[in-house]
Length: 235
Image 1 (cartoon, rainbow, N blue to C red):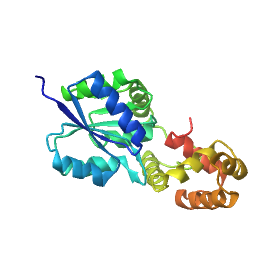
Image 2: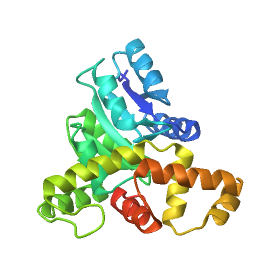
Image 3: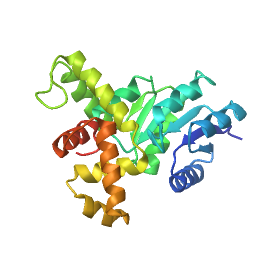
């Protein structure tokens, strides 16, 4: 009987965790998934199941940075193999992920077969990055000597990298709902439209907008749109 490949799947959406792990286990009976929604549950799970070999991790957990999960679980098991599984495929998130020495990077629009192939390849020691990540990484490397003109990133390349880091941390400080409002604002929806679409009061959305501007250290809608593009949440 083939031994099972044990996989820790960290994602804060129970429906996605349950459905994807179910499909993968039925597609490949050698897979055995352990599910977690945050850093604490991920570490508890790994401590109880130290023979887990691979972690499939979402970057955007509710109130937590998925990259912090990588640090936390590696303090328990240094040689665990990491696959980032995310909706983001922009250079900033790719760069941040690669700095963690991950073994795989795939996006959430990947089909079940692609996720399965990535897991199996990583298990065998390969480094697997989806096509979007490869293209964006190549572009990032080739444009690394270029500096932005105007907006957030004037100055030297090192200044640009530092500002990107600050922007990334500021965005990660937003709650899930604030990130949702941030995206809708970036799409040039006004407060009244957002309130209607989210079934919230105008006052609630206005308060969230104020908090977003404070946390992101931006002063107007143009800066917000620019930040959204740089973060990859607005293509």
